[in-house]
Image 1 (cartoon, rainbow, N blue to C red):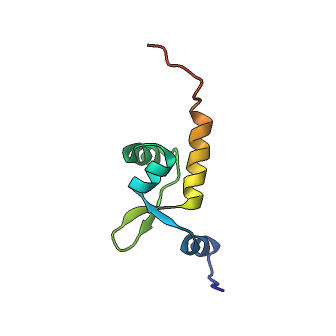
Image 2: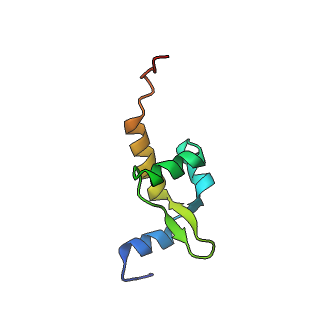
Length: 81
């Protein structure tokens, strides 16, 4: 069993990781939308993968963002033209 000082680090090491493009596809938005939400502070900043300094998302990150997105976007709501 892997034990580390930081529980979040342990969870991050044990879960699947996705780049921004793949995470956005799993969430159902464009990657620029994901970037904008992060920049606007609507979602927490993604973890960074040290080698390329690219954003990486875990399964837990994706699940939390999906739940948040589903709460703010009501598919039955119509937009007036």
